[in-house]
Amino acid sequence: MKACLSSRPVCLFDLRELTEPVLTITHLVTHSGGFHADELLSSVVLTRLFPAAALLRTREREWLEPAEGRIIFDVGGDYDASRQIYDHHQRPSPLRDDGQPFSSFGLIWAHYGRDYLAALDVPGADLDAIHSAFDEEFVLPVDLLDNGAIQPSVAGPLAELTLPALLGSLKPVFDDTSPTADDDAFLAALPVARSFVEASVRNLAAKARARGVVLEAIAKAGASPILELPMGMPYLSVLNAADAGHMMFMVAPRGEDWTLNGIKLSNDTFDQRADLPAAWAGLSDAALEAACGVKGAKFCHNGRFIAVASSREAIMEMAELAVKAVQ
Image (tube, rainbow, N blue to C red; front, side, top):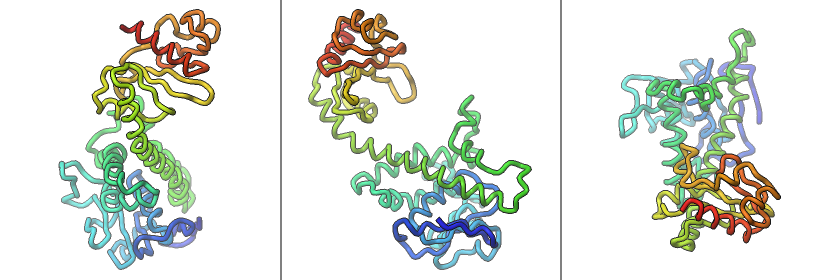
């Protein structure tokens, strides 16, 4: 990574060690000064796709006019993909098909998100689904917050722990008088933002890979209330979409042990379809073996959402006992 912070406009870096750009883009231009999540996250996408391009933060008018080899975002007062300018502050501002507002991140994702996913080696068959899921789960909340369409207070006591708030906390403090403070902070925040974007994409891609495995396990289980998976993996969304409301518990190997898990009603709650037996709660080793009568029982969480045993036979026996306790 090459940093060059001594001139105006400010060339933050280029990432020549990454893949070659899809188009001949020489400059990625956004505004200078304080930063928000939308242009920071847009920069994550664009610097991955155009690693040889210089990233400029400037308010100089000559750089905010569309030109060959230039992508301008979150500044410039216009949205015109044919001219590679992606601002959302002008009137009328760009809106999604459903009338919700775009930020620069939403605009960049709409036009470059699929190429970005391909650059991260997301399989072509999954591109559209992951592009849409990431837009809904990750991009849209940033767009809404940036435009004031929702208030941070909707997150309640977690408001300061949302991703835009955390990225915003990386801005320089008010009494940092360094002339490069904003640019230095932007440069430091960019890999942090990148890690969150890439982790989210990896998780969505993992869900797509897991789908076939989970569907096969559901079919194999049939009418059984116990879902057995070959390893821990994302399964809840597939289970909820399938005709599998009868399933109460999931078992899977974990290292040398096996786990018995309650199945949450949704990812938005800790409530489960069924809890493990109250008599097991908080016990381990000999005490748990005595309580459940299963040799090899090792641990049951006090919250009754997971238990551990030393073998598949032991965990399946515990699963059967848990089902009987519920019934």
